[in-house]
Length: 502
Image 1 (cartoon, one colour):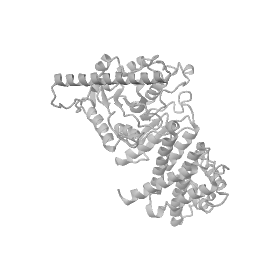
Image 2 (cartoon, rainbow, N blue to C red):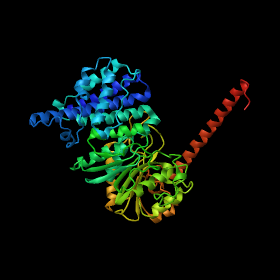
Image 3 (spheres, rainbow, N blue to C red):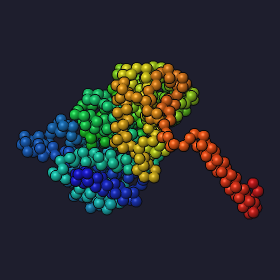
Image 4 (cartoon, rainbow, N blue to C red):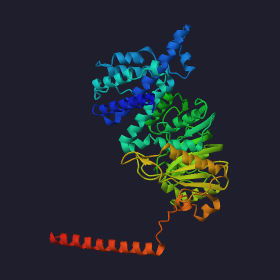
């Protein structure tokens, strides 16, 4: 690990430690807004200052021309909102009011940020001494003149803090954050390209778009040559996504406001090349009673008590002729026969849209411990009439006692397996991957559980003859049953001795 990486990680941790200090001085519902808002304010001020100095050096007098900044996708920051001003007030009682006024001034100058930025810093419950300490961290530990990568550092810090907030907030964190290894797996398999349209109908804080842009840039493309469309129902999460895109320099159309994707589709005419999503698991009620005649339900009206197949069909409806979908769903969607779900799944399979199903390990998500599956749905599949099944449940490593993560090697293996399938060179591996035809899936009653197709991993021969092994295991099991009965009788006797009759 090089020195720069160490410095970056140190800064991210410092910001997170600052957030931890703030928890004791502000209501839990507000602390996330405080930190992500400061990261955003510091970023746009740094980007503006860099461009401002360049324009001053050119000597043409354009340093106060807003258009000169807009041309480079840089937000114009009025003088009273610049970080140099914020820093001067760090240890004064007015610091909260100064930051709130800065946020309002930036919104006034940049209409795309209207009603997006947090303005809760003057809250009397927020200790202004602690807030000043946080401002100091932002002031003293980012030096653009030395690194030249201020924006990227702040972008990673934003992402880091969102991940940590998701972990700390538990179930609530799932509303705005998908673990980066899950997003990377979706992106590495789908491989979005330049000049494509990427859509997420339940975009959370926008992580899918960040990883897509990174992928394009890493493969010699221009991260700016991507059209981003998203929608988010939660107002605070929608604001987080807007700020995340701004920090990353990604132009995105999230609509003028937050909105429910089913009842108010903000991108009705969109046909996307890539759709990536982690919609709410088993979401209900989703307003089915008002949408029974909706054009999106090509394969059948989804049941009112579960939106899984509403999400799937919504995405298929928004696919371009050669479009691809990568989405995360709870495992129940693979086999459910509830309501119309089984029939809808059958029709989608028979329409040859399911390209790949990946069973993921448990404990990847902060919000839920249930196992999930990645679905890859494609129009005009390279291998028509065939579907790849992967059982990745044994992959990954435990980060701590509660959470698992996938390594870069795990993600590469999944991506390489999918590529080999598309190229027609993949060989089935017992317990890991298998290719099935539509006829094979029909024989399994159109159930998509990977275990049905990949089978059980072959065990190494330990040299013990089968008959001897069965005799030994049967004897061991019998002994366990005997001990179990002895323990049961002992517990019963002790309970009877203190007056309990069972």
